Amino acid sequence: VDSDAGRGKRRRSSVSAQVAEAEAVPSRKARTSGGGQGRGRARASPATSAVVEEEVEAQGGAAEEGEPGRHLVSEAEAKLELSNKNSEIGEGTRATVLFHESTFDSAMISLDAGGSEMSESNSTNLEMLYCVIEAEDGQVEFELPASGFKQRLSIGGEVMVPAGAAYCLRNLSSSACAKFLAVVPR
Image 1 (tube, rainbow, N blue to C red):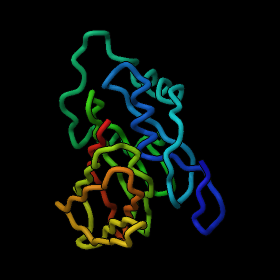
Image 2 (spheres, rainbow, N blue to C red):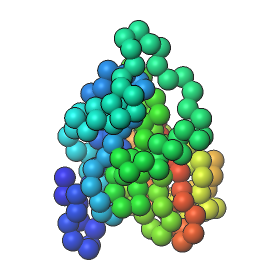
Image 3 (tube, rainbow, N blue to C red):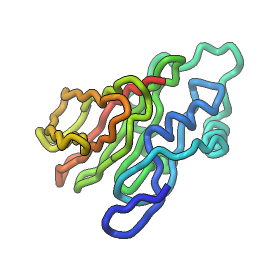
Image 4 (cartoon, rainbow, N blue to C red):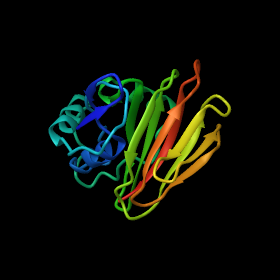
């Protein structure tokens, strides 16, 4: 999916695509991998299960049938997953699926300092939840472009993305990374 960031067109994947890719793997232990480089507006893209399968294989393969799946993700494990090159979904933006459940998925998203942003649409018919778990005070911006709504957030801030709405999360800090926990309905 091409996106225009005012600096030319670049390839970009999205959190929605990360979650969709995780659905293609029969294990909740699966890690996701994202697409190209580029800062700008991410749009949901088709799932590429082959990329996910490669990463699962690199991490020891899928869980055995009947294995209960992941029940705990430590902070260290989440940081390690986000540091993996395959977690990149755009310049300065990384995501990893933490849990892949029958009614929802959860993911951790990281936006680097210096204006990194993630823009996409909530393609579900339920609200999505983002919780700010790391950020400089007041330096995360949530925007609903269609209504013009903008809100600054800090650690502990939560936002609900309406069903079907386009939205954007930006890290306005010049020095601190911002991290989010996303709960995405299926």
